[in-house]
Image 1 (cartoon, rainbow, N blue to C red):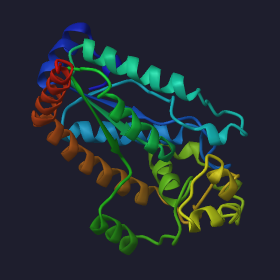
Image 2: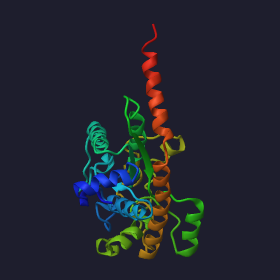
Image 3: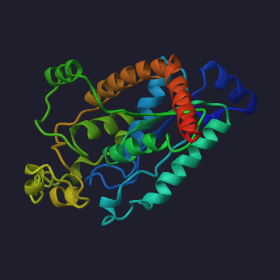
Length: 271
């Protein structure tokens, strides 16, 4: 159920019928090579979540494009908010989702650059007492069996990363008119290798991705097909539907979170 399409009465019923679970798909606006749209991550995230909702009902929050994408500010079309505002905005949105009746919020991540941001964000939910739980989930992750099936069923490249075979195939399925395979620049997706020393010594730096892939494409997309994209999305949706089901039945997290805050209050009573 799409939040924005519901009437007030339908919304009230949806809060109850979904066991108070709301899913917030989160992506970003950034370059995806020269052949894919800026909103690729958001489009894929929304498609997967909407397919999941057909298997396991939930309320889906409207498009949310304010992800961590500072490393792509050198290209037009990127929207990169400051880190403090990103965290504050997401915090306020979650508060509003809770105020509207949901006490289980799933951040459905469609952008790799959000991984660390969302992992940190869910930890900040313990900064002060809350009567709701926020979960983070990466939508694109498949298990080994699913990946093996795709590799055996389709002609695929050996390398993946960004604006690659997987993402291109998914957009070919979602909206082929947005994909421009004639604009591919062969070889542009190869790593520059400038961050290899950092990688070898298990170091990271904010500029690392730019050092490796300044053209915002990593992995060969030339073999992409809509059929592959459709099946990939179907697998992701099936996996996420199971996660939604688990959240619906999860009473332990909120109970333990409440217990945690109670114990934090008790520490304050020590004299």
